[in-house]
Image 1 (cartoon, helix red, strand yellow):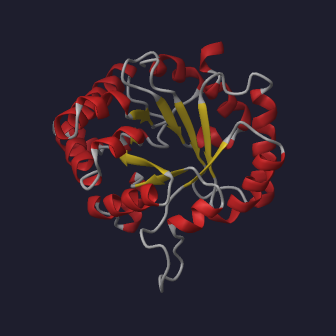
Image 2: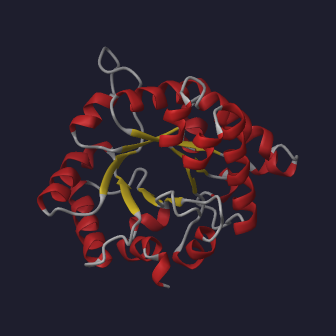
Length: 259
């Protein structure tokens, strides 16, 4: 990882924790991180929508060095879209990072690259930073299509953005076959794909955007493998799923430099 890029480690809680549990988890995480806090790492937590206001209030009142994130958004700022939450609503809650295009959104809710692009654009328009997800299935990897799949997702998902906007956002590479399966891409495999993503950004946008964009790895990240992942030149952080639900485990991941 290049020192110029500040590492970012994000906890995606998915559909876990009511707002009482969320408060307890964030309090415990803050305590576990201690006085040293995040040691130069940006730490984001992404609770369900129903928890956001409670966590926002807690972070502000206790002046925590933890950044609030959301798991998804819609691309319109308001309207007759029952059940959706807009970027402007999230921004009012001091949400700073929004995950868009997670593989579960694509798999279970039919999100396309074009929808991901609209969401990423809307998140930036509301003054927040998108974490744009990409990744291949096991079948695609075994068929030798991993790079072309991720290449297409990056190009289409970021299509309408300027080089400056792409350089300021976060891309999360999450091989679908490693999410919640206990299987992890080797650090070399993860590095190879993250380097490929950076080369795509350089090719489509600019070398400056490629040097600046932060690329996370996501897929069964744990305290035992985070340090090795973070030594890789093109891995700037992690999008953590299951391990982020346990404040002790997540704090250990954030504090990877201390192990």
